[in-house]
Length: 490
Image (cartoon, rainbow, N blue to C red; front, side, top):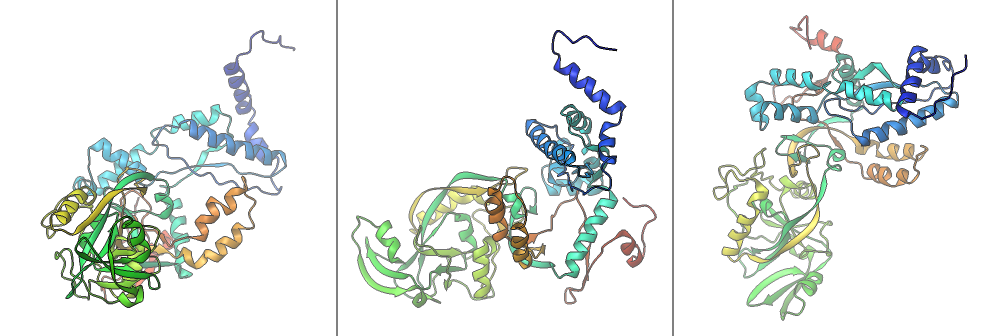
């Protein structure tokens, strides 16, 4: 029977009619079954979180996925379109913190971790219906009836298996390194996570005088993180660059010759002596602060190739607890790791002048202290990119701490080789954004000192001198090794 064409086009009516036809006749299911046995095209759904409403950006990415999958389906490929839900992690925790009025990790622990996790589980599918409806309305064919869900035990167990494979290949290790750290969330972040939260900020750029020990004069150093000066243990110079000792305005200063020509342009000064950076190595100076009493030798000049003549004074202050380069040079010279900052980002009791202050908030007070004591040579604003937590928007700190790492640096060559064999769309990503990432890949800081996530399946001996550890790859293995495994677990 013929239908009379509609006089007025109604897109909503057309959408609903066609979608009803698809459902009534199982068209999506048939499109998969008809191609069973054909060459597969593998699709992995990068899962959204269902504790937040979908927005236009999600519509765009889902439409793009569907276009590719429909094209490959028309080419005859067999494609399993399994949906997924990302149900773990900081986004969920922060939502629950807001709901319960919990300010930080201490408040969570006081409330009770088990109770907190129950609340997390309650909200992870709050907007599932909205996601399903949106996915259906835009005609993204996706199996949402049997999705993979990251909180399910079988999924967690698959992560355990993967970690055990890395463990067996000696790619999983415990180390003490400087990692990006959110003081508000109380956890380390990966390099991928911090790439999502950079902002252009203005920080104080200060020139600080360090008194040379048993000699008249000062080393003139530069920093954009005044708060790290509290934990200073060394000054770094470039080994081959020329440095000069000058008399300027009645003061004797040592700095890089190239930088003196720029920083003191238009000013009169007398050059008293010249050295290479190498000649300054091991020269001692007096500490700016005496809050720390390190057991190892500190407060002397070290050599470092990363010292640049592009900015600053050619002399860099070193605080191994708060910078990757600082930490590396600290290990080379066996410097103490002075860590006068608590995990919440505030100064501890022993830093009497600024105890309890958040470190970046203390910058103006530290600058004033240096100025009052005649140790501040100059100050200006420095505009640069700074990492913020991608979820809570707090400024991140680079913080030396113990963590479990996946040794991505060991597989870097393999990553680059395999990347070169991939057909990228758009092509510029291959050697651009993604290529840059893997060429400079860092070991992955895996540990997250949080509560709602996949538990790390590593057990270590309580005897610190033993250091024996095992990595569990399945629930069955855990059951076999346990002395009191519960009948029911979640």
